[in-house]
Amino acid sequence: MTRVFSGIKPTGAVQLGNLLGALRSWVREQHEADSFYCVVDLHALTVPQDPTELRARTLELAQVLLAVGIDPDVATLFIQSHVPEHTELAWILECTAAFGELRRMTQFKDKSEGAEFVSAGLFTYPALMAADILLYDTDRVPVGDDQRQHLELARDLAIRFNHRYGAGTDVFVVPEAAIPTVGARVMDLQHPTRKMSKSEDSPQGTILVLEDLTSVERKIKRAVTDTETEVRFDPEAKPGVSNLLSIMAAITGEEPETIATRYTRYGPLKADAAELVCELLRPIQQRYAELLADPGGTAAILAKGAEKARAVAAPTLARAREALGLVPRS
Ligand code: ATP
Ligand code: LTN
Image (cartoon, rainbow, N blue to C red; front, side):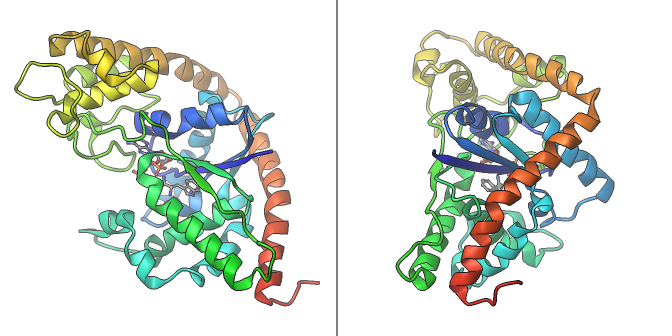
């Protein structure tokens, strides 16, 4: 059976881009493949975190994933730091990756530029991400468009390791990225040329999955467009309008160009976009409220998930250790 793996960082509240670019594919994939979904708390540590907040955000994120529709009886849901094999393989892959190839990663450039403190972990981040993926013999990785380059690196590391140490039998499966055709890059509503993000400080430009729906509606109605009036899908010339059309397309499954033909003014376009987003979020928020009543249930799901994950990760790590010539642990 095909194996799917993906991860999300507990770095802030889940936003609409996470949902449309990644989480909806996760929910779909769980019925088609053996799926592992991970709250990557160790990746969150690459930038400074408040401990109390990190703990709360990690559990909140797990509950949001359940509310979005991840079924723990079908998929394996767990917290990255509960499976220590991730950090051990990450070290091995840091020694497989070249300094120069990590330096080329655009996410590192973006996140380090202008930062007061740049951790070494922010630089080696993609090696930990490759470890996440390769530990599970992953065939497919559903992610948003911003992760394309990291995925390419994970593939290169798998191929390089197999070539160097495989001795005729591959140690790692070479994964493929699965990036949706629409919704893969939801843009900030106030700055439509940059992606919507959890940790970027742009409250008016970011729609949160758990946000009050009146506020969601207000933000969409105030989204930055342009001084023309024509509704047309053209991300280069009309980034704001095109972003709204892409969001609607990702929700309805229609083409953004087709949706555009139904509008002659921005007002009705925004009103319909707001309604579609609110309809998408409403049932998720209701399920989340129910889950809040049972925190013990979520903890039990995560404990079972970690156990299932470890049963797959440990033999893969043992294979890599053996191939490298590390003396077996007795
Ligand atoms: P941060 O702001 O801390 O970097 P983030 O909001 O970018 O966080 P991640 O945890 O890095 O979120 O990503 C989780 C998943 O959501 C990834 O698959 C990523 O590609 C996807 N994703 C994040 N932002 C967007 C977006 N604006 N549009 C589409 N997909 C997105
Ligand atoms: N780097 C990703 C999060 C992430 C991930 C992964 C995604 C960490 N490990 C493994 C897919 C597979 C991000 O910043 N969105």
